[in-house]
Length: 344
Length: 205
Image 1 (cartoon, rainbow over the protein chains, first blue to last red):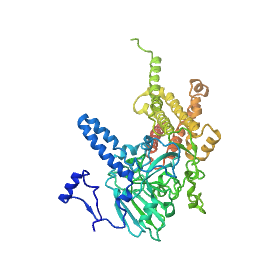
Image 2 (cartoon, each protein chain N blue to C red):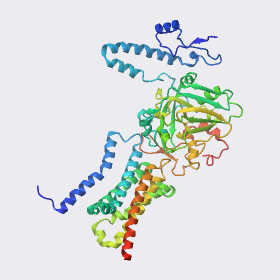
Image 3 (tube, rainbow over the protein chains, first blue to last red):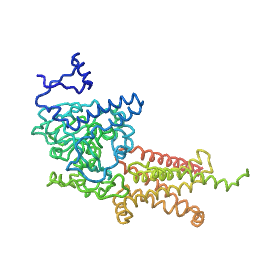
Image 4 (spheres, chains in turn cyan, purple):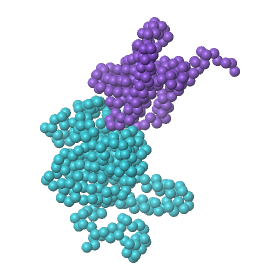
């Protein structure tokens, strides 16, 4: 049964759409009746913005004919921000000063592109975040694979301004764009055996040159307990600062777990697997006495080689005190009865 | 142009060398004012002064092999300047840590030095270099006497080893750069061993 015409993949002008229909090249997709419809999942503001973008681009194309390249340039500048209209003001937001975009995108730990924090910005041009396939499998009722854009389309995007605390004792404040991880868990319908969620980064040394040297056990993997992953703070990001994720920040999809050290927030995810046993996580395999499975931000449990009591907020010269769970006390109940010194 | 006396020429050469050795510091100051030290300027300053200290220290240890293998006898005339500059960068490196990481709290600093092995190593390296810097003047060399002075200044090897360990123990996963420093140090030790065994065998005849 024909549910609706899906015209995302054809040229947008109605004339061309008409032509496409006449010639039979119009893409017609029969959609699973249980799946969300496009109008249900695309925020109105976002599609209105898309239209505004199209007309504005068309206008500047005309202008470009008149005023040369400058019109084109301005239309490109206008088109630069993909998620400008995503709802802001989450109750989870911190009101601390944002770390400048320049610092967020030039100071990264992403060993797939080199171990220096300046490397990912320089070397991540080889990563191709589109097309991109995400697989959700393991202990779920129906394992599935999605194209990244189809995957994002079924999610209600929002902005979350979170603190990010690196295990190296520095921190940032970043406005992420994305959706709760809980939404993915709900949609995947994990079975009764599912106790953990494991994540895997892309493995492709051609796109990720850092994987050519055996510094870590590639591909990078991370994991959470299912109840941690279901917490409303756990977030999957597709953008930051109102725009799509830059490659060096983990395009096209990354985890953001703000109460844990940054390395838990795995980047460039290709697979989400529900498991019955605790999954292997990269840094824990690399140094089990230094990087625990939990890796909750904890000023009272030092890294064996350095103190975790303080941190340097990027943009500041002196250090500030690190907060338990990075200031996200609402997760404390996840760990009642657990010795956080042993389960670091 | 008037020909320079040997002493004037040496002074000129030393001045040029000093200028070259101050380039890492000049670059830090320049980048600081240009705002090109990156997102974490304190970390950048710490790393750059540490690298400069270690590189110049290794260069000062290379003076004897340079004399031998490159037949550049006059290299010895620049060793004191190299050693003192290495100490200067080490001191800068420590001062940045003391001011920006420990906010001049000596209690916290000593607790950190005692508790963190990699900091213990780095701090010990600097402490070893302090008496060497103090006894680097002509006056002190005379006062101590050649053999005693030379014995004291052998401690520079220990300082270099500790400095490399300090670096090695702080990296998270990629030990390439400390391994390069370690390799250079091993080469310097090897050249010492070769000349030592040669001297010993000569004595036997």
